[in-house]
Image (cartoon, rainbow over all chains, first blue to last red; front, side, top):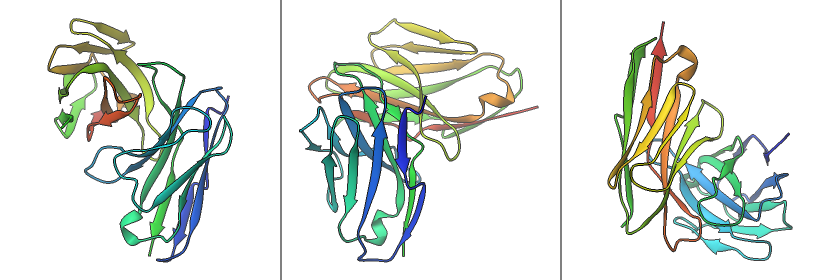
Length: 113
Length: 111
């Protein structure tokens, strides 16, 4: 019972490099989300996808792009990585409808030098 | 602006010493309040959803309550395995399932 799977688990990049973080869920959920978690700050929403074919900006979208590849997969791309994007990135998914809990993957730890 | 504040930032308890964690919120319209547990190196794990003031939910040694301004997570007779960071999040009406998180309470339970 995998739930939400994120790859890779760790990555080190140089400033200016690009990278795509992958996320897949096997719970047949409609909605998917990307968050970043930084020390002393709560999880902050980067982008979300309410359903297949739609994406919307969250609280901190600058420097990121997303693709909802299909119902299962939602990827996050850093086109030109900056040290300020060093963080732990979490993907989550939830069922359709209000008040449904979000279920999280175990994160990608990304360092940008 | 929607805000979620958790206190204390860190809490150290001895095994069996009950206590409560606080989550206060200021939002335009609460649709739901969520509690999560996060272990080091892991993603948040869902615990409870509370929808309206007066509601309570229980799971093993944990009990969550909700008022119009805050939520409490009561931990009764904690064990070392309850050590984790506990996160609170709110879903605001009209925000399409988006969650606003607090910064968490780091709980350590010692023998």
